[in-house]
Image (cartoon, rainbow, N blue to C red; front, side, top):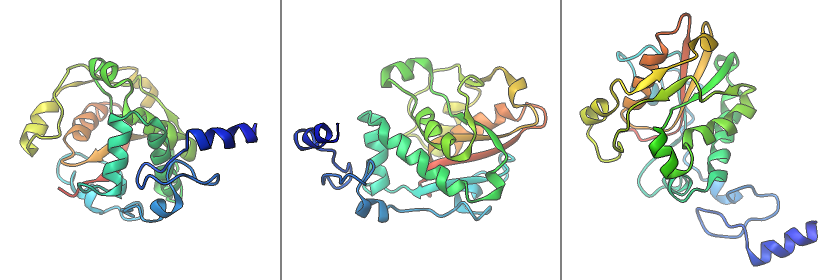
Amino acid sequence: MSYLNDFLSLVYPNVCPICGKSLFKNEKVICMKCKHHLPRARFSQDPDNPAAQVFWGRIPLYRVTTGFLYNKGNMIQKLIHQFKYRKHKEIGLFLGEELGIEMARISDFHDISIIIPVPLHPKKKRKRGFNQSEILAIGLAGKLNANMNNNILLRNTFSQTQTRKSKYERWQNVEGIFTLVNQEIIENKHILLIDDVITTGATIEACASSLLKVKGIKISVVAVAFTGK
């Protein structure tokens, strides 16, 4: 089987989605050089990090962290674009695992029992073929010893993409669009809400507002990247 894999790698080489170079056997998804140079945020050990400050005075969250910094044209922007729009799900799993490895070192995250991905409307999910937050959650769950559940928070209204909207327009775009079901599952639990990128925090705030209706819930938030805008 290894001979077959070696042959296939010559015909259809696995390449790094960042630099385009062929991956060696011990490299997973991206090459070691690019992995070493990823713009890591290193927010997990700081409760008052810049991503957490986005939500100050808006919504009571226990902890907020992100794995990387997102800027136009940087490595993380390229990875997320290939993951979401070119359907390279292996990139999402890799990014989720990287988040989990970092968070597993922090005691504040050890009692998380359920990971809830920010939901997509069914129409958008059918169009894209998957929910990127669910893929991230699957990669993350294995490292945090928690379960991913996508049947608690549902998106009941189709809204336009947030990409080109102002801060106020983003907030309007997601106000009241989430529905909570099966809430007894998360009563008195520490849950983790996961998304791909934190910009204004409008979508996460809307999700958390719905989740906070549940008795005894404690909410933490993680995203792959933070834009700093």
